Length: 297
Image (cartoon, rainbow, N blue to C red; front, side):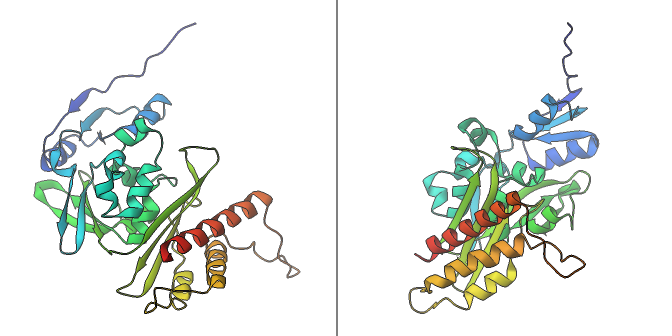
């Protein structure tokens, strides 16, 4: 029996500023940026990736914290899930903190970063539906000190992509000062990969409800019509009251929008959904109903 060790990276660069990291990526187009490495090392260990060079982002202190900016929070892409799960951050953006606490076991939360969750764009990324519901914006760092903005939903949907030498530097999130909820269902007890997740935020200033469903599609889904429907039923001037039937209706509306019925057959009949898909739809409906109920309470 013989063993084969993975080929080591030919070069490792450890910049201390965001612009130095961009310069390193520009000079080495084949290099792969790495922060926590939770997704990268899984790809290397499985033989799916053999990076020719690495640009480590762990020493860039400027992207490991957050600051306030015109009614928004400017979050560094290097924020770890463990840091976002702490009480002071939870007071700022409760849904993102809840997603960070649900991101997996402690070793994953201690290493994994917000920017890595976005860049890898895994459908089960817990932070992604929260960022979609909050309508967050990315601050992209490019060569020669350039900065540009991109809605996070554009990157996740493939409408816009990172260009050569670019890095996600910051994530700008509006501070709504209103209830936010993140819930997810997993296939086993304890922290694990989501089979479905729901992020829901209230926007009292605009009298709106924003909801995003994760894990069931390649990107988070926004049921916009369901959002508008339930927002019109909420008594925003009287403690955000809503009739109980609206909670049930919202869950069903969200689930049907994200997991629609099968296309009609030639005879006009609608074939039933497979049991696994029907179970997933029921799960999404329950999560959306509970998320709205908790936000309104």
